[in-house]
Length: 178
Image (cartoon, rainbow, N blue to C red):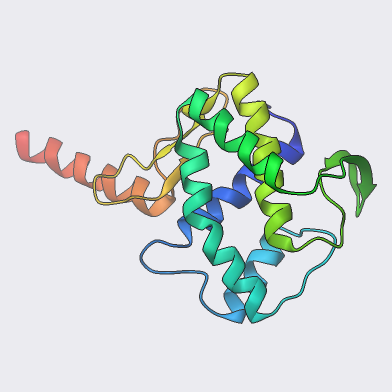
């Protein structure tokens, strides 16, 4: 494992949110919002309303910038997020998850918790100098983010769709040369 479980989960959630802005959009409806909360079960306050959905949609460009920034710029983005939000860090254990860090009070809006948990995860990325694990998908037609948490650093594509499309194209190119 490269990072602690809560760091990996925060990175996965942030990448999911960023990628939800792509084509097709996957964070438009209350059902999409519910799917995000099912996939990434944040504890604490969950309004599950149009305002919360709009707030999640609104932070996607900021998350993308944070995640793709070079190391020194990433640190600046993290520091900005930490400075502009009220922090209440504490170790918690709940819902079958062992001790992990919560950075803000549970009654704070979900969008603050997502932003700050992403910032805290990026602290681990910065300290370990592992920013290369977050990149734009290697598919030339895709702008989604790829999160590589593999041991051998082999993940280049955002999804199996892009992986398969490129594998088929490579196969066809080899066949055409033969």
